[in-house]
Structures are given as structure tokens and as C-alpha cells.
Length: 109
Image (cartoon, rainbow, N blue to C red; front, side, top):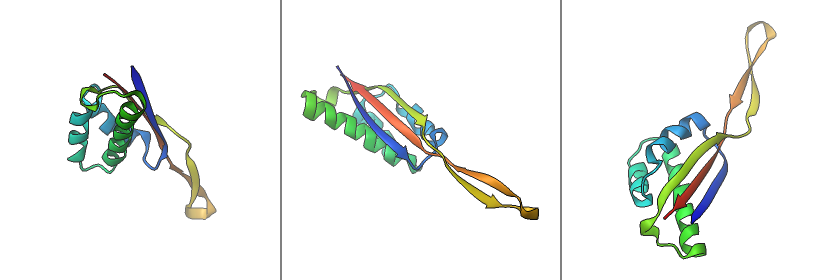
């Protein structure tokens, strides 16, 4: 059985989140959390929280053993962008795109 957890509109771009996500894909939940704990990237904390949430959903809602859970799918999609303007020379402006992402984790036993 597969159990899902999603976090939406994180403050990090999908490109930065995918660096952490690619490291833990296919690993056991406990191993992935240990791996993310020692990463220096601030996105590792967010990814770790989503993995813990998916494991808790599996344990509490479906009575699955958390020691047996494995990350079957994990991905980061682009979310909405906040568009801001930055003043430039000669009265012009250039855009600033503040990107965010959605992180989805699917665990299975």
C-alpha cells in the first residue's frame, strides 16, 4: 500500500529541492532521514519533514510498520512564482522571480 504526503508552496526553488530529493529516492525512511540530517542545505530540513509526515500517515492511518517503509516516489514540482521588479539604469526595470515548489513523497512497504 502506498501513502502520500504533500507540502505546498515551500520557499525554495524546485531546482534546489531536487538536489536533496534525488539523494533519498528509493531509500528506507530511516536511512533517508539520517542522510538528510547531516546535509548543510536548508532544503534538507523541509524534505525531512515531509518524509516524516508520510511515515506518520502510514503508521497512524493505515497501521503500517514505520521500520519497513521505503520511499517509492519523491519529487519536487514548480509552484507559483512571486514576481517583483528591480530598478535598473535609465528608468527601466527588470523582473525578479521568487520561485517556490511543491514536494510530494509516497512511501510504501
